[in-house]
Length: 495
Image (cartoon, rainbow, N blue to C red; front, side, top):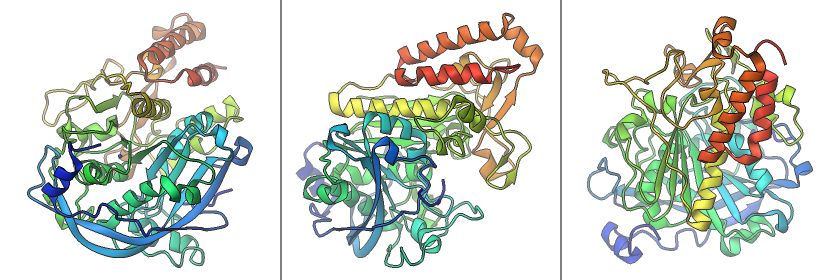
C-alpha cells in the first residue's frame, strides 16, 4: 500500500517568440538527473492493489538547475504574457510514476499531474478522479512534486494529520531541496521533458510515450493557467492541458500564491487566444461562483480551447474524498454506493449539511481525459459544453430550477433525473466546507411527484439520461453499466 499524504508548436515561430520575450534556455534541464528511489512513496493513490491491475508504482528523484521567470510588460487579462529568465537555482524534487508493467498495455500517453499542495502536502486529485479510466485504457501517470509546500510544508488549508514529505518521512526525503515556487514552472517543464527521449527509459521503464498531457486541479490549475499563458509557448514540454477547477486568476510568476505579486495578476484572467496545443478546462459550480471565481474569466471556445462547466458538481465531493480510494475494477456496487453516500463528517469536521455526493464530477472528468487524449492524438476536438446559467443579480448567482438544481451546463443523469438538490456551493462560513458543496435529498412526497411509477419509472428515465450524456460525449460508454448499477442500488426507498 502507498502511504498517505492527501488526498496544462505554441506561438507561431518559436524563434520569433524567443526573440520577443528574451533569452529563455532552449536546453534547460539537459543536465537533469533521474535517480530511482526504491521503496514506497508517500502519496495517497488508493487502497486497491495496483499490481493486480498490472500496474507498477515507482518513485524517482529529479535534480538539476531550474530557472525562474520575470514579466516583460504588463500581466494583461487576455493571457498574452511574455517572460524572461530571472534566475537559476539548484533543486531536487521527486516524481511518482504509475505505469503499466508491460509495453503492450501502454496506450502511448502519459498524464503528468502538477500535484496539489493546498492541504500542506502533496495530493493527487486528478489521479483520484480519473484513475479508473487511466488504468482500463493503459495510460501512464506521473505525479510531479512541483511546489515547495509539498516538500517542506505550509499550504492554504490546515488539515490535522496531513504532512509534507520531509515531515511524513524525514529519512526518505531528507535530500529534497526546493528553491521556491518561482522555480516550480521550470521544474514542471523539466519533469515533462524527462518523460521523453533518452531519460524516458529511466523514468518509464520500457514505455516510450508518444504524447504527454499536463493536468492539475484547484491551486495546481491556477498555476497551470499561468503556465499555459506564460511558459508553455516557449517550453513546449506538453502536448495538451487539462485545467481542472481553476478560479478567475492565475498564479504569480514569483510563485507567492498568496503573496505581494498576487495583486498584479488580473482577476478575470483568460487563456491566451493564440494557443497551439489543446486546452480543456473543467469548471465546477464552486469554481464558477466562488469569490474571485471563474465567472469573471469566462471566454468563448476556440480551435484549441474547450470549457466544460459541469452542473451539480462541487470542487470536491464524496468521490474524491472517500470513494476514489476503493474504486477498483473489483469493488462491489454496494461498497461504492456506501462510499459515495452523503455525509456530514469529513476530514475531522462535522458539517451542518451533507456534502455533494453525486459522482458526475468523477465520470465527466474521465470523459475529459479521454477527449483530451483523442484531441491530441487524432485532432478531433471535444464537444462544446453548454454554459451554466447565471442570474443578472449583483453578485451573479446560479440560475436554478424549482428544486434548486442548476440550469444549463454540462448535463448528467443526476441532474436531469434527480433525487436530491445537488449544489457546488457549500457552507459559506467555512472556507474548506464551501468547496465540498451540498446534497439535500428529496423527501418521499417529491420523489412520488417526479416518479409516480416508482423505482421502475426512475430507472427508465435515468438510463435514458445516461445514454443522452454518452451521445453528447460527456460520459464514457465504458462507465454506463456501473452508473446504472449505482442508480439501481441507491434509489431511495429500497434496492
